[in-house]
Image 1 (tube, rainbow, N blue to C red):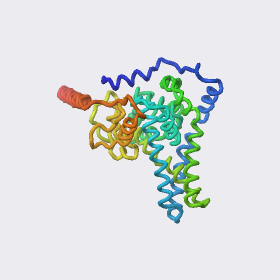
Image 2: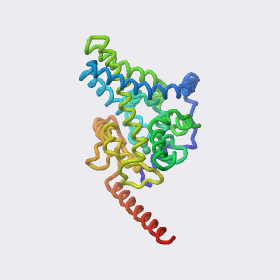
Image 3: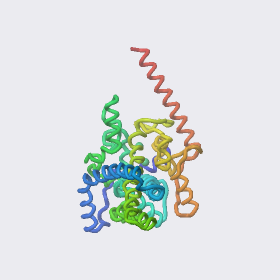
Image 4: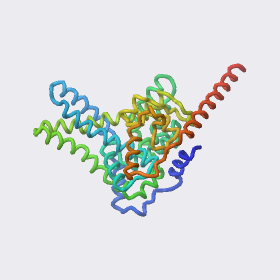
Length: 348
Ligand SMILES: [Zn+2]
Ligand SMILES: [Zn+2]
């Protein structure tokens, strides 16, 4: 196991419990109350953006909306997606780098606006996905619903968004233990506890922007529609595509033990680099998922920029030699498996 991978394993610490001593009674009560909202929020976060997307397209056909609304959507979509990819995923779930408090606040707030759940819950769920990828207990594996076209279709649905409605996948018992280290980070804990404030802000900003730019109530409404739920629809489906499509279709340069992760270039752009999902499963603790010069990874470029500006430090990346060694090991493993298969066929 590479150093970069083992470091991530250390952070998982499943035997450690949530350290509640540092949390106030009110904070604990709020944490508990949020869990009761899981199911309603699953409906709101899936159905509301989807219906809004259809409504926005219909309004566009009738001349309501245009370049201003699309610009508002993009100005909201890119930073909030960066909040998920760089803040929730690479910084918190994998500790692929460290960042100054201001940077942690910024990334945490932006990610919270994406409507994908509070940061510590998100990171804990994702860590469990890596710990038991495509095995019993993986919150969103497309590989646990049987083989054949029907099994894979059912699996794709579950991995994409069905898991959000499944209590066991959403909030399995003791999920906190996957994130004990994050509760100890006062910035991340505060971002987590104030999740709904940032979520609402993510809808308020485009509404105000649309109103101010057009100076009309209709402009405010269209700003809300495109910069709010339409933006959430597009960014969420791109991220969910990593859980579903990237564990079924695509290229697999690395043989990663017991998982089906795949690379998909078409998902690399809308997820700011996360489409290199097999690379990511091979080097989960790396701040970069694109490992070749041509593998576009916008999040990795941003992290490099933050590092140059002194806002990110201790950035972990595999060396070219580590990548080559893992590639060679994958080729050798495939050859061994093919040879074993030929032997089995030859000797009935
Ligand atoms: Zn995965
Ligand atoms: Zn990951």
